[in-house]
Each structure stands twice: as C-alpha cells, then as structure tokens.
Length: 124
Ligand SMILES: [Zn+2]
Image 1: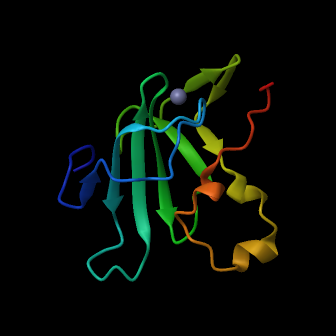
Image 2: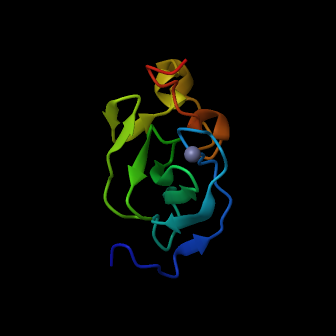
Image 3: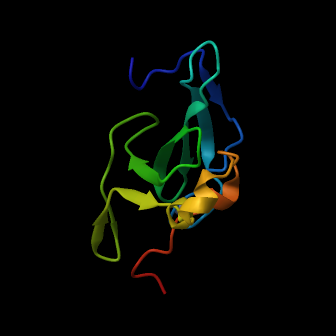
C-alpha cells in the first residue's frame, strides 16, 4: 500500500538524489525497486529528506530522472513549495538539457551528474 514500507525498500540506501534547493545530501534515504522480480527493467523510486526543506523523491526508469518532486512523505503525494514567491511542485534536472544524440547513448541512470537540478529561474 502506498506510504508503507515493503521488502522492496532499501532504507539508508545510497542515492544520487540531493535537495533541489540547497543541494545537500538527504537524510533517511530510501530506494524502492519497482522493476519486478526479473530485474530486466531498471525502475526505482528514490526518496530522502532534507532537514531544512523536507522530503523529495523521483522515479528512475532506465534513465536519469527528468524531474525531482517535493512530497509530503516518502512515496506520498506531491507538495507545493514556495521558492522566491513562486509555487513549485517539481524541479527539472539537467538531464532535460542533454542533446538528443547524447540522450540516445547508454547512460548510467544513477550517474549523479544528470541528477542535478537546473538553476532555479529566480536564483542569483
Ligand atoms: Zn535542502
């Protein structure tokens, strides 16, 4: 059931997921394998909590995630954040900015370079 831990969850698992706001490492990380028993599909949910900014999660299906979501709890519903007066539910990653040719290459879905969020529009 949603929000409940199962044997497919790895608590404290290493994850490339960082806080999209302060980019710090997250506490209480967890990774849930969704790929099924055969593991022929790379499909994982990653979640973690920033002490300052709360829970975030993202879904990884064979490729680095395109968006990181602010959530109410691990595997919970999306929550709205207000950043510089703007309402934000999700944070696009730099994976979106890869040229299509490069995206067709074989990319490690857990390569943390692609998990970095784009600069927020109003930042700086
Ligand atoms: Zn943070």
